[in-house]
Image (cartoon, rainbow, N blue to C red):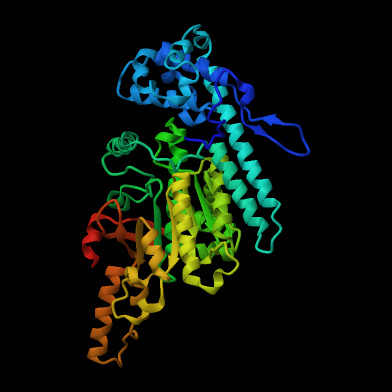
Amino acid sequence: MLLAVARRDAHSVPHMPDEALLIRSDESPTRQLPSNVEAEAAFLGAVLIDNRVIEELPTTLTSAHFFEPVHARIYERILQLLDRKAVVTPVTLKPYFESDETLAELGGVAYLARLTADGHGLLAPRELAEQIYDLALLRELISVGRNLVEEAMDTSESVEPMQQVERAEAALYQVAEGAAGQNEAQSFNVATHTAISHIERALNSGGHIAGKTTGLDDLNQKIGGLHDSDLIIVAGRPGMGKTSLATNIAFNAADRLRRDIDDGIAPEESVGAATAFFSLEMSADQLATRVLAEQSRISSEKLRMGKISRDDFQQLSFASQRLAELPLYIDDTPALTIAALRTRARRLKRRHDINLIVVDYLQLLQGSSSRGSDNRVNEISEISRGLKTLAKELSVPVIALSQLSRAVEQRDDKRPMLSDLRESGSIEQDADMVWFIFREEYYHNASRPDTPDETSTPDAVAKYNEWEQRHISVVNKATVMIAKQRHGSTGNIQLRFESEFTKFTDLAEGERQDYGYE
């Protein structure tokens, strides 16, 4: 991670710490930015004497953590040479600094040799590295605080204090996570190592999942799991089961993490995930009722109305005990802005290390601008970009549910298309994957003819029989249509959907052949 570290004057030198950049105020005496140039020099000397020191550091130290610019350049060159498997000494560094003007003021390349003169840094290199890192964090905090004060002093009419609070919390989160410089370019070597680790994880999982599990094998095999930094849009018309699928995935991921930890698997090795569920439509207890219905296999309707037996209640009690330790966190705050949601997500990441976020649903979020309602398309664009930014910032998959326009209902073929996404332009563009949920049963039931009796005509009987045969093939079936996927091919996944329990599961092999979508 890189930090925006305050730099001294270009002509300052390491052996004169009193020339460090000063903070001046009319109300307080002059103070120096936190730094220890001597510690930086001692640490560099230790590295030049024994290159293995870097391999044993407790924290990732980069050149931007150094206060003195000369030291930052020296350390950056050391890292580059070590990456090439070269041995780094004052002699091997010499060609790179012979024309360095700032170093010339310190005695030229002879200064590199002076860094290794006494070797005191070898006595405590880890402690020196930690101090350099901590002081860099303090300087970053000062920068955040200075910006916060300057913004708070602005009393113009356009100022929105809550937005300032959200920006301040975001900046503090970046400091806490050491992510203030994540937007810096990284070498392709680093990116390659990350990609290889993901591929290795997929191989170890049996060759079908590299990200977080959905709990649905067929879906996992199609998409390879839920990948970090991805924005997944799950869309459908009302009644298709969007919230049910999202709730199932959230539960499956959280439950898998809990079971893996119980089995002694480290959290970072698990394909499960602690999950944050932002429900802008349903309350937390309504979502909990859905999960309880799914796990106890008792109808949600019966649970709401209390039409259950004593045995059912005991079964429900056992299910609730199993769910007590579930790493699933529900935030049912209504009318959240995208900025507020990102702030809450950062907080959950910091407190509970969440690795999956679900938002139900996108159109209920609000943009940050008070004038966003003047142009809903622009507001939706801001929201979809904000969700994608959140996924990248926290490096977690974000699943956002979305409504479809009524255009679907006007067509004979009710299967949705990308153009059916409400305010679709930005949503389709920002999403890494777009899933549509389609249940033919929903529309087929609406076309049910009258049940034939002794007065029915042969045509009416034949029509009903035809309807009934089709009903048998589509009842309790659902299709997840992968309409967009940046990491692979598109296509359809067939699932079983038990509406009574709001539960999605994989279909048996024979059932897949009977359903009319590939």
